[in-house]
Length: 418
Image 1 (spheres, rainbow, N blue to C red):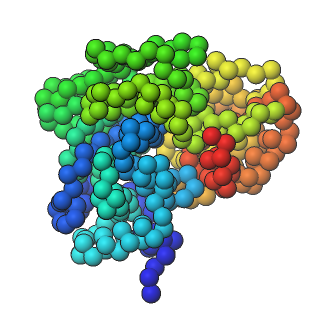
Image 2: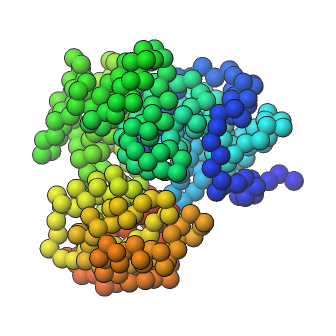
């Protein structure tokens, strides 16, 4: 009897992180994976990966080409991880891919993430896509995506996150992420102040390094923005619907990558891509009166981006937060900073072994001076926050992908409001 997708996923260890390249390289050396010649773009970084991957996929699709996009984690449904031209893979496609991989792998053990990556590659290969855009899961050097020979790599940003796995300082983490670059290829760094470890590896590997604000940049106007990279320039580009100036940087990073393959692209294609570019849960406005913002911010850098947006978009009323966080996100280092923008917190403990238990969360937030209410679960926290808000108030739901999943549960709330 054929297993369903849910049964397949239940059979894999979804909570275990098992880094390393040997297992997946063994399977990649076998047919049909060793027949893949499609250009591959890998995207790593601390924050902004999902937005950049989606922007690049939208540019390729708008240019009348087929693109396979692999991302993680998902918000609501596993299928979100594997998309072709913006459409998630169907259950039967993923099941067929898992069944094929089960045969191909033979006695080679595979992690949940490795199964996911290989399933994406199998599906993309069978759909004959023109490009594959693959998001690095964790770090870079030992991430399964790094087992592939990419044609271009992107590192969006580097900041402290996953310290247990990657190190606890910027340069150590940057060295881990820099391993996704390939000798003789282009590597794009999508943030200011590129770490020394990335510059050094690029020099050692004969990699052409393109850096934000040095090799490419954007000038933002009230209703449009200009983009420039080398001699290539596009003026008065359509402003994206995605909130936050950092999204213009993410789009510019994706555009710089796209231009390495499609240098003659027309501005009309870029404008159309900007109009279509969507990704849920990135400073996403779900409603007004009261305003409700959903954001997956979960570490120091992404929370700072949320703080910057709040600074530039004040309201007359009060701001309430619906919040929880995973244990490894060092919330004590950034809670006090965003607490200055929050009048009242509605907190809950997420499900899962990585979640911060409610007593520890209460202590962290009390230490940061937060005024809080403890709620039974995410949906209750959201209902109480919205229920006590007036039209001029704001509710921010943030803390991780898992927070948005547990609070909203119904994916249509996020996907239909874009």
